[in-house]
Amino acid sequence: MRSFISAFLFLLFLLRYLSPAAAGRPDIILKTCKRCSDSSPNVNYSLCVASLKSVPRSHRSDLRGLGLISVKLAAASAKHARSKVKKLLKAKPRSHYTKSCLKACLELYKDAISMLKASAGAIKSGHYDDANIWISSAVDAPGSCEDGFGEGGVKSPMVKEDKDLFQLAVIALAMTALLG
Ligand SMILES: *[C@@H]1O[C@H](CO)[C@@H](O)[C@H](O)[C@H]1NC(C)=O
Image (tube, rainbow, N blue to C red; front, side, top):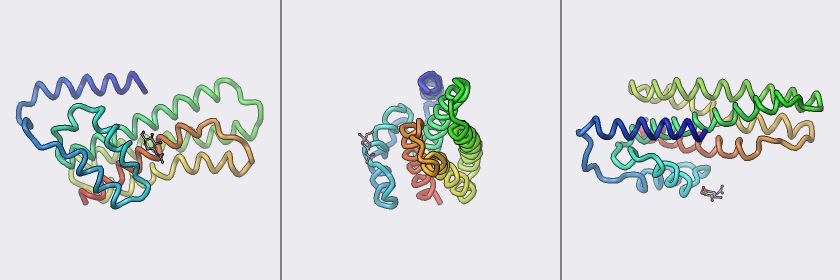
């Protein structure tokens, strides 16, 4: 996650100096996060502001740019969850049930990552309805992962990752809905 974000930030840093065009746009992070949290009760306003602010390019992005950034942040979170679940599987879980839950979560995260990738492409080409459907499916992934553990009365080792992924995906979804 960290190295992905560093690479991402570096790329944004480069883009900033290679594209003189966008200078001087008003900062729309606060306004956009407010609209997102007004439209969706699941959106955490302070997380929305903090996560977008951590990406320098956000400050000079338009709504579509913010949508793309939020999708990329959600994808980074899904990748982080995927690598943790892979590690847990490698560590040979003791119970068969836990192992099957982890495997199910791995598939869910993989799907979420490809859905989020596809939705970034859809946003770039203005297909916001497609993006919305694909991001919605990524929003559901962490809850489905948690449900598996819950149904067997097993404590989930993915609570933190699932919460993070849910919150970031919900922000991406609310932003794409504003684009629609
Ligand atoms: C919202 O996000 C902030 C900042 O990340 C966090 O401290 C807070 O616990 C979050 N609130 C909820 C309800 O998850």
